[in-house]
Structure formats: structure tokens, C-alpha cells
Length: 414
Image 1 (tube, one colour):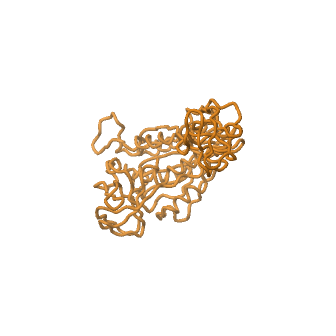
Image 2 (image 1 turned 90 degrees about the vertical axis):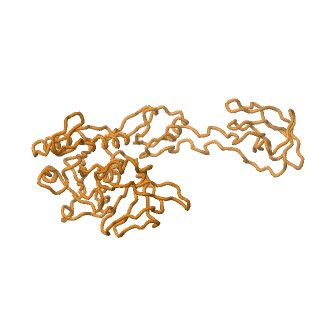
Image 3 (image 1 turned 60 degrees about the vertical axis):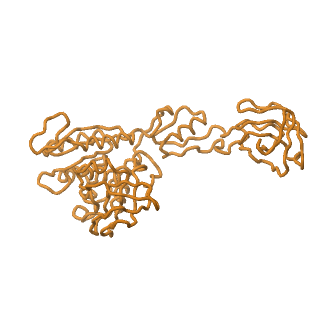
């Protein structure tokens, strides 16, 4: 893996969103290494190898509904057939359906030999021994063929698939007890700043409690990463250098919060330039303009802003997809969006892409979306109250109540 090359003015100019994403993903590859895990332990993991169907699914032709298994050659106007048995799921009819015969059959039961059609029970008139079949029956009706879902020897799931509940069930349907998945991505993270205090310590004048590490712990754990919380690192060059060296030796990715904007005490930029490679330091968004991306040895680095909302915005818009790519997910998921009517005015100057925290819900004439009050990058409640971002493009100016806006749902981001 090689880091994306830095452009000559990347350290001075804020990149557009797509340009930043392109630089991030230019060199990303799935981390090497995989392991076998039981399917109950595979939820959220990423397949490193295809899952090959060891048999057909379904394993045999079976009925798609309750009804009668018949021969279509017997279907003429007013045909009355003799019921010669019953087929249940897991307990098939052992005989052969002959001329003038029918077999009562239940959903999922194996289609008896000789039968080539299933007549739904609501289309037939039956008593205990006979059934009258209406005309118009065709071969293959209401029969699920062997291998219709999955054929023997074909990939049931492809490498790069992230395993969810449906995939667990599909793997189980094949009788497979273990799957091969990429190893967990190791992510080290820490906060920087003399003003940041850990929970449990009394606040000195001018200090605040560190929320960013807990936010990052939450998003990383939900992704299924192996997390290494390195605490709060003070604004001291020696301490920062030691933290970066320890993190790069132990992890695939380093996430920091704070210390990437311009300021006398912001040492991270200088440190990373000296220890590794840097692709960019600024992105043309709000909140979250100061964000660093680069590499220390073989470890990817994302330097996130210090403000709590900016941390979440930059993580969801840039970091999460990068982590999924390193986890081996392919193709990467798309971000669900919808058009909605904005219920309030929003002030905006053209020039930056803005992510406004909001609540979207059904309205009288379609979807309606409302900002969640104060939008400062330190107001973490604006994220807690929200279920979406209103995404305002770079060219967008002020939004008036009633205008249509693009909405990015939180469901699907994680």
C-alpha cells in the first residue's frame, strides 16, 4: 500500500469533497490476513473468500404453495382426479403420480415423481378422495426448481461481502458452519490538547471533558474494528511523537481528534510531516474543514478536528468508507439520500459543502426536514437529536422554508 501523493498546494488549499475522497481511496487495499470463524461469530465481518454452494438450494423441486401435485396431461375440462396420498415438507410422497391421480401437497414439500404442476388448493374442488382440476394448467406452475436459489458449485456469497442477518441465514441454509473472513481492522485513536480532560478527573480552569474518544469508540466498535484507546495526549511534541510511534507500531489506522487546525499549539501537522506522508490538511466542508489524511510507515492516519460534531461529520463522510475498504468490503455501500421540503430558513454562503443536522419525517405532501436547532460544531446534541444531514452543495446560497433539499439519512451511514 502506498499513500496518495500530496499535491503541491494540498497543505494550503481546501480540497473539494470528491477530490478528498479520491485521494483517500487511491491507495487503500484490504488489510492482509484472514481467519475461520463460526457463523454465529461472523456477523459484521467481511468475507475474504467466496462462499461456494456445496449443493443446490433448494435441494429438490418443491411446491411453492399448498395444493395438489398433478400431471398436466390429465388437465381437461371437468377433470376429476383420484387423491392417492399426501406430501409434506420433510416427509415426501414415496410413490409415483400416475394417470388420473393427484397428491395432496404442502408448501415446501418435494414434488412427487410423475407430477409436473402444482394446483393451488383455492383453485380446486376436493373431497376426501377426489379433486376436480380446472383447465388451463401448464407444466412447471407453482414449482420451485432445484438450484433455483443457488446452484451447486456456484458462489453463494462473494468475497468482500459484509455479513448481515440475511447472509447468516443463507450460509446456514447451505449447511456451512464456518466461513473465512478478513481479520479485524486494528484502529488506534487518541485525543490531543491540554484543554481536554479524561472522565473521572476534576476539570482545571479552561478544561473540558473529552467526548470525542467515546464517540469514536462507538462508531469503531459498531463497525467491528479492534480498537486501541490511547487516551488523551498533551500538546507536547515528545508526548505526541511517542503516541504516534506507538500507534503506528500497533495499528492499521490511527485516528486523532484535535490539533489539526492552525494554531500555536497544534503540533500534529509538524509531527506527521516529519514522521510520514501527508496528502491534505483541509476539506471544503462545514463543519470539519481542518482534517488531515496521510500515512506513517504502513499505518494510515486520519487527523480529525477537535469539535465534536466536526468529528462525526468527517468520520461519516470520509473515514468510515476508508475503514470499510481496508476491512475488505467491496463494493462500498452507497449513501441513501432523498429529496425533502425544508421547513425552516437556513443561512448559507456559497463556497463550502455544508452538513446540517436535521430531522426528516413524513409530511402532508411528502418528506419534510427540519434543522435540529443550534448548528455549532461543538453542539453534539444537534447530532443526538438528528436522524439525517441536510446536504447543501458548494454552490448553494440561503435556503428558504419550502425549498427542496437533499437529505442523507443516518440509517445506512453505519
